[in-house]
Length: 342
Image (cartoon, rainbow, N blue to C red; front, side):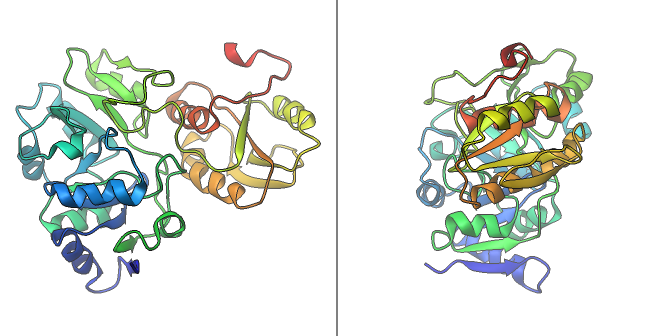
């Protein structure tokens, strides 16, 4: 199969991509978070193609993307009371809600569960594609299963060229990490996956929110995408350091006999075989937007190992922290302080 590269600003590109979706094909498309691999969410055969292209197990459920409130209501049963405040505050945007599903949603989308994860993306290209298709679109990240998520069309093609019908190139994704997944099927809403909407923001709207730690959860029967203990991983081994320059220096010293690359905060005085300018430490929005691009770039540098400092458990820093822990398999080296207590 030849994968078409369609440019979103070209005349007719959105409609061509929409025809592929309507005919049961696969199109990768940018959202504000990462590129998603889309298919008609109401067509079980089309959705099966997503799992085949990604080599993704069928027990890992998908997120369904919509472009209107009316389309959302085609997929869901009675929406919970918290929905309205969340919708008015965060949608369109990088928030996914797990709610009860209608029978129109195929079981392959939800891994056989009676709930469905739904999202209203903010990216104009995604909105235009969904609207032009006239269909809700099931779309996990457009990469091979467990690999680093794609934030450019080039990243998509690196993983899926020849496996899908088209990629709709809309430039780089501005947020750069996946949506937050919030379960609304329980009395107290639960964050199933950290993402671009921080827990603190949700608590301001909802009050009480439970945060699920998925690191040690079983691999099968997942309630949401992104709950595997190892995910978002490059081929190169990742080692984590504490989030201070001196600790990173100590870790690099311990790895001095290896070819090492570093996700390097701007202004830190570090020497290594390869460094990716990650952005200013503490500017979590910038670091999140450059995380996957940095992991992919370092993975191409023929390294023995890559090292990243670990952000604190705050705001978007918590999301970056979770992604790095999963990508590394919690591989870290101690410096002068105990990593586990940080």
